[in-house]
Length: 82
Image 1 (cartoon, rainbow, N blue to C red):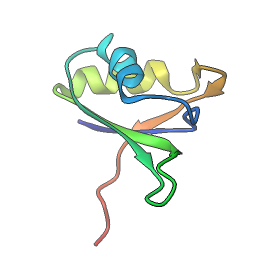
Image 2: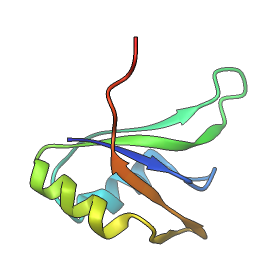
Image 3: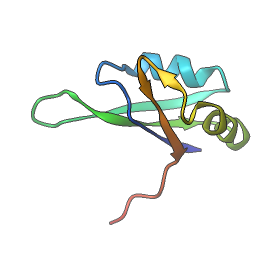
Image 4: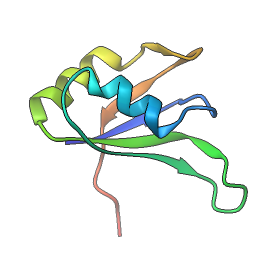
């Protein structure tokens, strides 16, 4: 299951997101989206979890939760438009 994570602190790392979502199950991959020119975080990212049920549980429990001073926006990722 691919999960969108918004309103991330700009200091958030992939390791921190892996640890956060790892509490709910196996994390296949994590990507913090960065600006291609500055290399700084754009404040959102994506987490891919192995199991749909674990992903849904993570979404339900983490959406709106405080993470390093910011309220996370967590939802199922929508497919990328061409």
